[in-house]
Image (cartoon, rainbow, N blue to C red):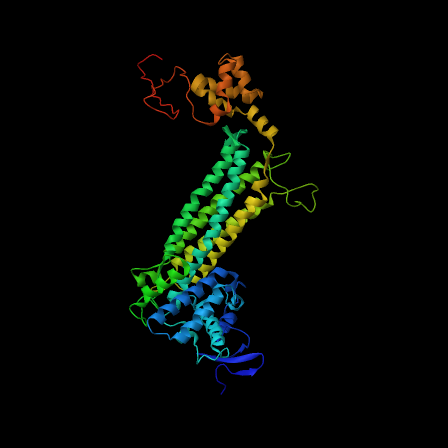
Length: 504
């Protein structure tokens, strides 16, 4: 019988597991269990190394556990040093191509854990001067996986991977916020018509529109950061179901401390490891924030596509940068492809969140077997949202220009400006003016002057950009009494209804 680690030819070595012997490529750092997982889970064609931060996280967890086991005397100097060096090389980017298991897999992440154990063991064997697969000298389970189970290593690694990944998303969000605010500053004094329910509403500045988009994204930078802190609580040391079987009583806290020292993340061990081993609530919360961001960014892209529609038969208020021809049949057509692709990213993230929700709900008893699909969808959502934010900022928002003549024409012919006159001429008179403007197409200002409702100077003041786009004090119409200042300093107007027994 051929012993494990021996070779049958120059291209392969023989390894043994529970199910028997298998040939493994001689130059591969992964082993027989990874080979079987490759064969069993040909699902997405997205291997573990598609997410480098996940590989880095796995290596850091293995490194921390090796340190803890060494401190406790469970792992000797030679084995601990070999594991540490192999893990350090992986953190620095080596051997990632040997993390080949599909991201979506059965077994609650066991194949991922064993892929890491085998790569680390075989690199450790080289460091110790032995051949790959010669596990008598450094074993994937006995040494690399000492005091561990997939059920605490995998969720801890996924949590760390998210913590390593999400800062790139918040940076991309900040970049988009800055780009939107820069456009707001550029368009600070330009008036336009605001719209509600796709109908003319009241005037606003273009800056207010762009700044509102920036603010809605800005709100979620803090939300995302806060939700990510949930991943600082880990179940390392829980082993199979949270009871800590096969570990030293001191191991759990020690391993968490080592991981915190290696990564700079203030990890803490959950108070109830049985609960922590089965609970996926942190993933649900974080994925929910990703969905919230996706919904918001998609709405912004809807607005950009609508405002740029045309150019002859649409809103045509803004021009998006022309980044590619838009049609294979219609000459001159340019499409809003950047907002369109970001919309599609948002749809994907929203769908991913539903998958995370179902996977979290589907867990049973002491373990959730569906964490691989949770991991895949959260990391993928984070990755594509990061790219989408940067793409939207750099290839769309930064190059937006205005069609000021269109904006002015919409404003001049809209009846929405009459709302600014209501506090002075009253609702009834304003309604009559609006109705006539709609029927005749004449400007509101012209009708107000014609009817003697206001003089030129007062009308100009009321229709000024400042008056129409921010709170301001005004004079009484005689229909509602103005309460004295009472210390108000914000320009807010407070009114009381008239006593019906009192003459107006």
